[in-house]
Image 1: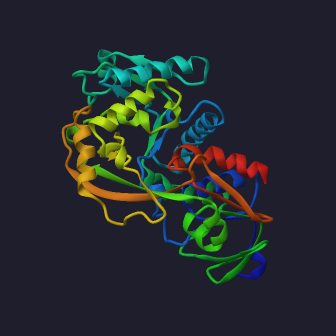
Image 2: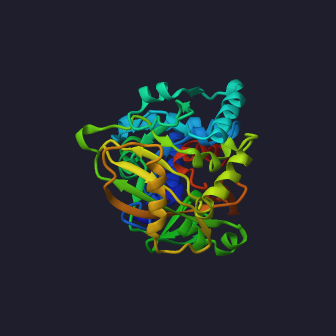
Image 3: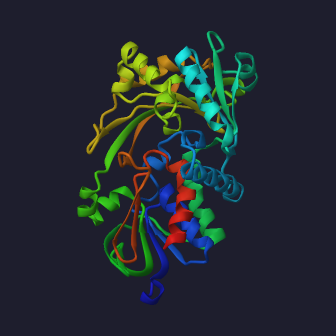
Length: 378
């Protein structure tokens, strides 16, 4: 490629969901956008998750607005990009009084917000999900804002969509080894860009090690599973969550009964908080169930998975979900970056360079909305 052609308005490092979202936002503004990805395809946390676009997990305010905007974009691009999207909503099930109390408090708090949530009876839940166990069920939270995609399918198809519809240029198997704005070295060639965005954690660590070390970012390892397709086209209907999930998402943090729920879980089943386990199940278009997950924190998570943690998850799942088959076809772990007490890490280590990282496991839910905010601010 001639040197004069190695120039762009926006250069993005990383083709995970954060990088793809920023590529879309910049291209919509008419910018010439190039994306560099060190691998032949995305292999990180962006394809190792539930595929849940999960506004119900975000607290009321700017983060909920960002999540709802991201949801809109997922639905908008899915048809042109050719990947399946299921705007199915979500259900949180309560089998203990403390779980039900949290749900009641949450719904009462949301009455003056944009959320469409309500409490359902066991009979009403049975109408929405053939998988939800109604034995001992005291009630459940219904939210209609959640969307399911298959992250492997969506992340694989988005680059072609961005290229064909928005003219974004992708360079896979191309490592960015140096940035000195307005220049960057990618695959041994020098490029020039008005704005450079580093949206890959691995590249952030190596390109700006001092910034990374000073950021207080930690890493989170999660273990997950995928079943074989459910027989006879069985559908769970709606993603299902057990009571443990109420202790995980910040949207429930202000519920007065949450403390009592956490105390009971700690006393009865200390292995759940020890390993950061909360249990959810979703289903993709192929009929496979995605089940998880754990949360292990540290700068260098253990690369080896623990079979007993997966068993804890499966045992708990069977307390609230009845499905024909739990034959596991795949297990894996993912690692994402988290900045304690923050929802993302954004830094500008030099003029014209922006680092976007540490969406704390909410990349699928927040990236598209965050990207519009970041690109508009540049």
